Amino acid sequence: MKIKGFPIEKAKRDLKKIQCKTDGEHEAYLNQRKDAIVKHHLNNTPFYKTFTEGCNTNDWNSLPVIQKKDLQIPLKDRLSIGFTTKNCHIHKTSGSSGTPLIFAKDKYAHAMSWANFMDRYSWYGIDAATSKQARFYGIPLGGAGYYKERFKDMLGNRFRFSVFDLGAQQLEKNISIFKKTAFEYINGYTSAIVQFAKYLQQKNIILKDICPSLKVCIVTAEMLFEDDKIVLENHLGIPIANEYGSAELSLIAFNNSNNDWLVNTEDLFVEILDEKNQPLPYGKKGRIVVTSLYNVAHPFIRYDLGDIGVLHERSTTKTPILKSVLGRTSDLALLPSGKKAAGLTFYYVTKTVIEDDANVKEFIIEQHDIETFKVIYTSKEELSEGKITAVKKAMETYLEPGLTILFERK
Image (cartoon, rainbow, N blue to C red):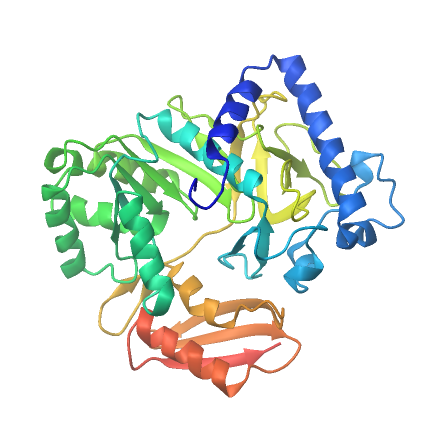
């Protein structure tokens, strides 16, 4: 991050200053940052100025809520003045909500996000920069993307396990790797790690016994159900930290050692809203809407994640506690060969049709039987033959050959 010009050390220092504020000081800080980010985008981001026309921009609760569909215009038309794809961090969402999105973060905002991750990981004795990581994530299986991720793995001191193949033969290989590698923590897709833990259960193995250096398992990207958490605790033999976040906003909530799911209030402002976009009291279920307090390159102000959640009654302004989240459940795909693949495998498939021209608005992938999948999508125009071929090739690459792939445009 330093090499690429991300001010990570400044972000770490600023994060500590924010965390040292009293409850009253923190509330004043949140109000100041909310006001500052709104004024910035009203003055510097034509997209946001147009988006808020007719609204009372001096009243926070009158500000419109941004939906993903509102951002499905070319990225260059959403950036603040002075920002381009050359001086920002550019990324894509996984599309797990069914609505893909390309977005940008300025370098300081991205550094603040990573300072937050590093801080939370340190709660469990993990140094995000140096601790050896067992990574259960996907990876592009071809081209420059593959080599880029492998290079990042090398720099990040991590070993990447396959989530595209969760069959017994591969899981046995995983066990042998843990036996000979001093991993300090596991990080990755919930469903893939749960599948591995269930295999350990079948083998009557506790992972900590064969890899004593392990300290914590951090699950992310998908729901963690209580019965799955018990399996993880029993057969990994280490604490389980539940990480809730999104690509656009980074870390939203993280479990502490008391099992409180603490919400990030350092660089985000999280609200639970009703159907009229008004805040709900603690304990009430509503839409999770989040504001990025520092992203001056791209507006994420009252941004609807597409998830439903509840803040605990014990919450305070400085220390909100996420009680529950509903959404982002991914099943395993079972294939004709017997191979199993994590639901988020399909992110790597659908990347082939996520483009900045915003043609594809939404997509759902249905498995109709063991060898038949249907890609249902909403778009301005039919997918080209080239795109259809690319999706089919990606399904073959990330899943297996011989599948029947159907397409339906809505």
